[in-house]
Image (cartoon, rainbow, N blue to C red; front, side):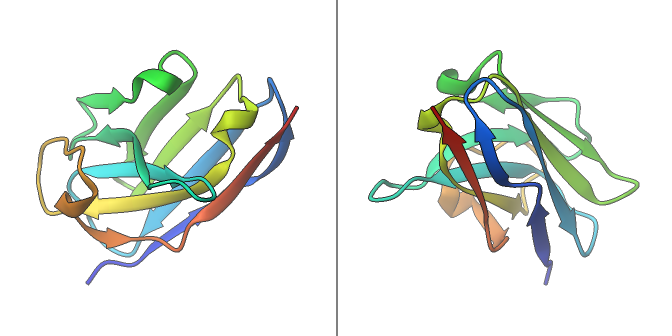
Length: 121
């Protein structure tokens, strides 16, 4: 069993930046960030493979968000720049038992509790 704890969320003005962190209780394989806005489905945001050599982000955040990991610290990060009001959501960290990148939430076995990101206009 792997526990995931997110941190770094908060309130920021449009155009600002936040860095989310997700600390895992053990070594993990592929990792991802998902987000869920009020009254909307949970959506994929970004993923990274087990060694950090491959990443993918959803088109709506391309050029603004970057996912990275530090395996020595069992931590994955989401650097969010140029934030927009439509980025407002609860952001969830997830860990998969797959080595490679996965895009579907059902491919992830462990989830954090979520951290709120609110972007004001």
